[in-house]
Image 1 (cartoon, rainbow, N blue to C red):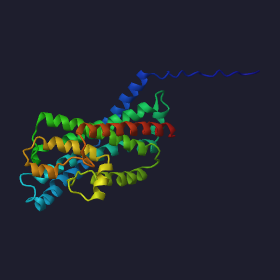
Image 2: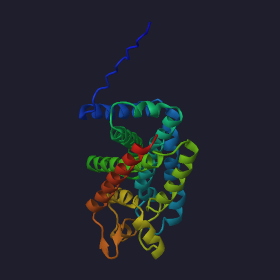
Image 3: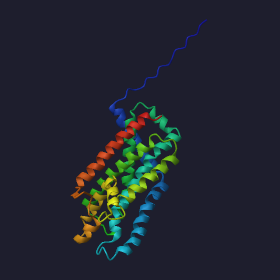
Image 4: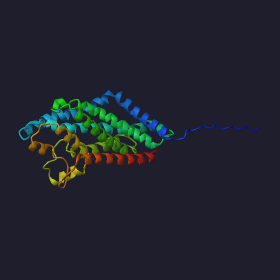
Length: 286
């Protein structure tokens, strides 16, 4: 007597734009919930920029007080500390990919009937929103460092923060897409973040730099995220022209002053390129 076994057919829904958009929403929502439920992470991401702003800013301000009359040095550092908050938070959000891979959750997402591009876009949007939310806390401290609570200024900084956050998260996703453990990612992250922050003009003016240092700041992508924020802040301040030229000279290519729309366009274009590379890396990942 022969026995026949009938195979059970499992119907997998066809991929569609609706499924991909739903996947983006789910991944984004998960990133937000993960961050909101981790208060220790929220506080640790804020501690470093706050220390730089109020401790280092006050200390350095006492050294340069006579050379920049009428301006608190912490006011100068304020846009840079916003950028630091956004960068640190965005990179840590991207690192969750490595965490998910180590604990097997990433494999569950990869077998879902959605494109891997949707997962990457959700990660980047979630990381950008989380980083922008952290930056809003620094925005709330504007009055403590002499920056006015102008609605136009706050909205401008908010938009520039989100753009920088999306770009840095896409960069982190690109790095994390093929990594197997958190130690490797954090080591590479620190190696990438520190030069970008120190060479972006976040902590020192871009005027009168040595030629070699000027070249490094010009080729650093984060310079074009920090400078628009600083120009937006200084546009609301009553600063003597000489002091403004020293603290807020803008970015120059040879003798050409780079306009703010060009700087923001470069950041947006870089974010799109990094997102594309991250998607390509993710499609090859296990």
